[in-house]
Image 1 (cartoon, rainbow, N blue to C red):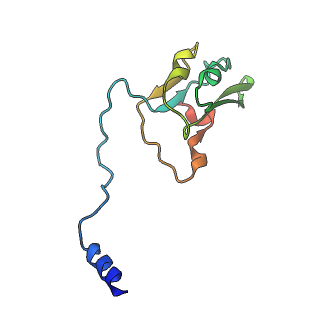
Image 2 (tube, rainbow, N blue to C red):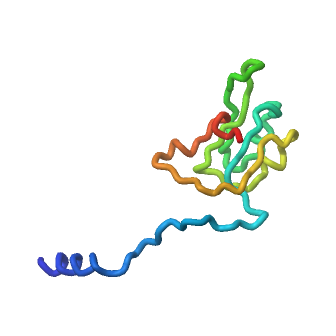
Image 3 (spheres, rainbow, N blue to C red):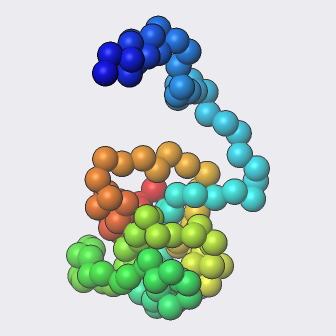
Length: 120
């Protein structure tokens, strides 16, 4: 009964098992892309990105703009493959992928990004 407790106490003073978050960011290859950026001014609400998405992570939602309501892409990053098909099919190139790769969140719902959150 005491043996597991003694082994646990012995391990407390031992070597750490986790690695601390690095101070400087890693440099990425030019082909790697992770976070989305949306230019809401040039989006024409064609929904091509929604139709091409293989995981169906993009849905068109209504957004109020200065010109009235407009349908824009909302992206669920928790299911995204980052395949960039949506970027390729966009006729106005308003939806792009950037090199920002910090995708941490405390709640899964934070991975669903509304159009307003994707503005860059």
